Length: 200
Length: 206
Image 1 (cartoon, rainbow over the protein chains, first blue to last red):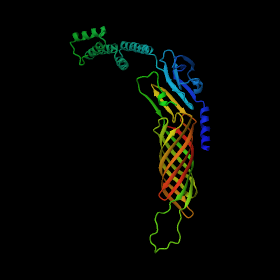
Image 2 (image 1 turned 120 degrees about the vertical axis):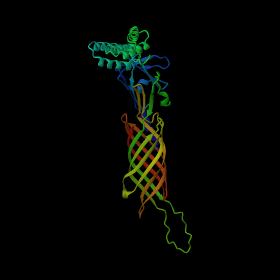
Image 3 (image 1 turned 60 degrees about the vertical axis):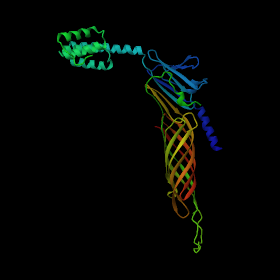
Image 4 (image 1 turned 45 degrees about the vertical axis):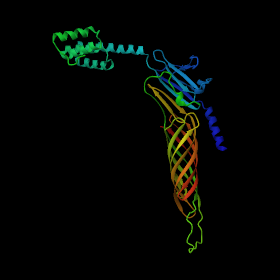
């Protein structure tokens, strides 16, 4: 009997306990919304870092799940369904990913900026560092023919014609519309009658 | 109540590695372990009528009560059930008596979530920490009992089966307080007994 009483007491305390509901995000200041599972209608709860209780947020919900959206312009919205577990603290960290077109713009910006840096270095004949920079860019953008074209240019200026021809061939292979790479490839093949080690 | 593992679902499912786990639990407990010991009567009977036995030694009784330490490790948690191993050793007792024991058993949780749940996906993370947890369970194990009779201090090896119930209250993301009561039956080589234990301590999600 006593054990039952103690258990009942604990369970009542449990039901009275308001579970914490904390949402953080990267980036900060994201909008937190509660999504109605039936209608899809969103009601804004606040901004991150957001702190409330499960009971407060879930008030009136019948299906036992919370559908939360964390959103910020420029980022892909983050959705999650959480149980409205009584007597539990819920901590959510939403790592929002940048929208694809914005990320692409950022990547292109980086590429163009770095290629200008390479050109500056080539002008002052700093071939070693310019080549290193191109190799870094090659890892991030392995399918951009301009990188191999510029590697070919550096090799040509260093009078490594065989190596230059290989890079131009690689560049032309990646992008057959790259006219400069094609011109240089044909020029080197005819002028020096070279045969590259890597046919691309 | 719906199972937590079913409920946790991402509406946007990214085609990448995701991982949801229940934490294992380590508990340090202090409390009282009491075993009422009844010595088994000898099953050997007198067959030699030429020998006179003046006195028959009756089976003795004793009780061992010792402040004890208990270390429990819960593993293979699925949110509602877990398995555990635990070790018990006496800290303070009268006349060097006490109970050493090792057990293996299970806990069945009565609330929605029996352990801390963590879900990772692409750098996003959900952590659910149950504030109150209640459970019952059963365990079996072996032990070594040191007890005193009127005339001597004796020891015995026993096997025991016990049932237990308890609860814990989380005080932080990774730890909380825990209380547990266990009742069991011990069957030894020379003794049988009833074991009652109650322990309080700190529990950690690891």
